[in-house]
Image 1 (cartoon, rainbow, N blue to C red):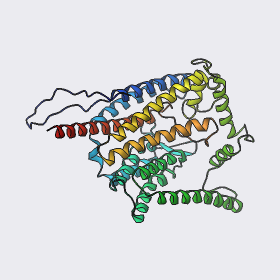
Image 2 (image 1 turned 45 degrees about the horizontal axis):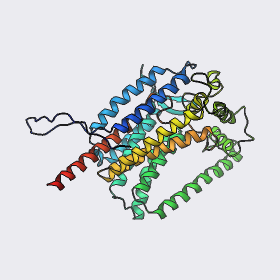
Image 3 (image 1 turned 45 degrees about the vertical axis):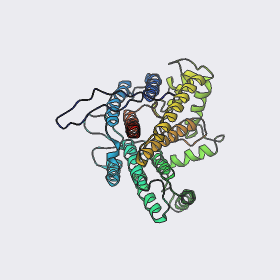
Length: 403
């Protein structure tokens, strides 16, 4: 893709003599984002057309608010945030635990993950916390400048990064918790943690997961119920590991219907707004968790290729923004954002194909949800801010060299 052009306002001199100009604009970045968001709106419109509990205009409103948020963050200098790691940690805890507050907290499908204040739409604070989790992890790792070799410092960093995950599991929201963990893993890898420490951490994580299942089985044998994992969470894992024998009347139903919808699309699909699986309400949660199935059913393999091409273009541009960053903090921010999106894309698409366990992780820029859309636009704004500061630093360096 071509490098971007710089669009500046005419410099103006105030009483302080300081110049003001708009930050550089990354044209290819905005074009890819615009196409991706438009594509998502087209698919969501079809997905919600037969649903009463979803409002398409709310999704449009999320895009409108998101555009404003993106523009504001793009203009803001992200480097001013690098010294506020503990503030971001505090915001994370407050946001994630806020659904537990009486009156405003809302429990849906067994998870207390939402807040509702008066006539305002329901919001999912855990989604907004993804922004502060990224800023927190980046700020923690930036101070090591790519070399985290001290074991005590590594344990300290990991311990701090686990706090948001432990908080989100009180809801419980395993899908969002996994996103937090993946963001932290990316921050540790990019931030320069020693490979030996990362491998040990991975081994400990696997051992803890095994221990959860063992403890749950022992607890059930003596108390008659599971205590660490919800029954539906266990069922999803069992369905993933043994899909052929999955009970079609229970957890296996979602996976089977998702695979039927994808397979029925063929090469060119059944036609826009002609998909039968979601129109007949056979496909569960079509506008949110299974929006990819709606796309595949109606627009077919070619429609899926368009989506994947847009995602690949966004990731490539993201890597270029990261490589042009003027500091470690900016590099970590962009890499954590890219890593988070890649994890969500692989998990969401993978779960609909039986390649990953079913979770509630949405598909970036495609799944219905105004909170989710605003958060993604805020992350785009952060990437734009990193890119703009990088371009400005490079321009200053080139000017200094030419003198």
